[in-house]
Length: 155
Image (cartoon, rainbow, N blue to C red; front, side, top):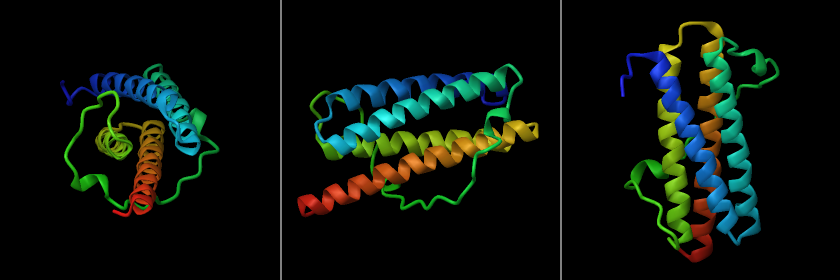
């Protein structure tokens, strides 16, 4: 991957958003915990929205969809930062699914921080800053869910 070419990075990000949406839909369809099922399906919809925003960026329409977006600081509790990468396997434990999903969001956040640093105009900067915040919110929600689950299990 040529990360010096902004278009290639955006194409990569679009493919990652597609993969993330598919992942969350698959996990959501298999999840039996109602609240977590809803969380995964909501994330799938949000990842679809992120993909559309990136596609709009490629056509020169960066930032216009973000006029009403409110930027806020998202706390990072960093639970996923201290665990190894996992690969999804059917039937994997719930705890591992949460860790895997949080790690995916951690990597997406890193990608959007890279894109933010390379942004060439205000619309692109606004889009990448928003995507950083969105992925940070997903990561926090997943890590909070993981933390609550571990407490529930006595860990």
